[in-house]
Every structure is written in structure tokens, then in C-alpha cells.
Image (tube, rainbow, N blue to C red; front, side, top):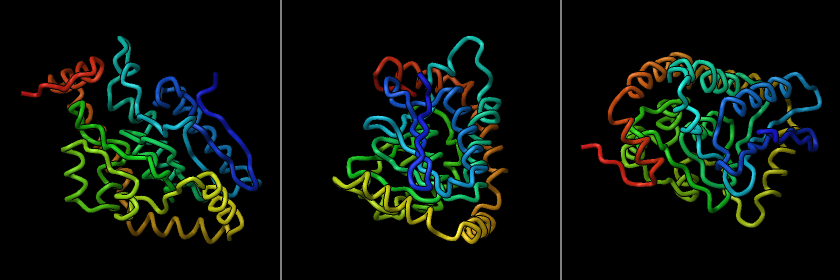
Length: 255
């Protein structure tokens, strides 16, 4: 079964994360498929907008921790350099608008992917969890930059430290999410995507470049530094306890 579904619809391509049995968590295959699909969308003149969503009622739980804990797994820094760092830069570098259709819970690295998108539209029952602190890791996937940009440094640190969920309503009130859809979520996504697909593609691409230069000029540097911090955190006893607790479905003991 492919980990990514691709559907063309009225000038847009819908990319659906498709590991519902694992809460659409990312593995190396899914990240690679997504990178290729985004590259194809960028080159395809029929595609003028990209929509990223999840299968079922979950957007994505983030990185599949079990994959990272395999015996021959690469270091966390190496993993980020091959997966999320280029993926985040690819989304921000695309001239075509990318919309995150957040159809349910969104956590960890998937939160970073959603934050990298140009717009976020969520269902009313969606929520966002920073996630990394729960397993004693530093933020990665650009979360350390994107989240304070959208909700402020104080809130970003609070929700990293507490690992509390940010509800869809909180997210839209704070500007993290552009719009929330109730029963009309799919219709709303289609309307937004169609509006973007009918817009001035060249001007949209130039505008995105301008926003990147003005607000995110150090994104590549931030992603690289997140990798350094993650490599150190990944070797800690705290992280080992966090992962053991997560897999054992218990509360971690970091004391």
C-alpha cells in the first residue's frame, strides 16, 4: 500500500498521508514519496495549488518513533538532513501555494510540516501538539522558528514545555490556523484550493519569496541547528525514558 495518495482536482493536487494504521505517522518512505510528489507538482503546469491532508480522521502523529529505534537507524541529525529539513525547505521554496488541510490531530514533525505550508485550514475537532518535549527532544522540522512566528515566543515555549494540545479554536484565534471548517470542511478546502488555483501564479510565487525573505531568512540555518540539538537530545537518558514511556503508554519519569 502506498504511503501517499495523489488526486488531481480542478487545478489542484491533493496529497493524502496514507498510513492510517499508524496514525499517518511519517516513515522514511512517506517522506520520500511526499518530496517526489511535491517536485512533480511544482513542474506540472496543470497543478496550480497543492493540498496536504491525512487519511481518515488524523492528519499525522509525526515521526514514527519505532522506525527511529531500529538497530541500524541513522543518527537523528542525519535523519533530519535526509527527511524533514529538505522537505520543509521544499515546501517554503515552492512557487505554488501549499495548503495544509488539517483533518484531525497533528503532532511533532507533522506540526512542522503543517506550519511550513502557506495556509492551514482545520476541522473543528483538530488539535496540534508540539510533541517533542514529551519524549525529551528539542523541536525540529522548523517548529522552533514557525511556532513563535505564529503565536509568539511565550505561548510557543509554554506549549513546548507542557505538551498540551492547541485546539482548533485556539489556533484560529491566535492566527496559527486561517480558518476552521465545521460540517463543510471538504467544501471549504475545495473552495480555498480552487480560488488559489485561479489566482495569478507568478505573483503568488513572488509574494511567497518576499514573505520568506522578510520573515524566514534564516530558516535553513535554524533547521541545521535543530539537527545539532536533536542529535544531543537523542543520546540522553531522558530521551530513552521518554520513548520507553511512550511505547509503554505510561507517564515518563524524568526525575
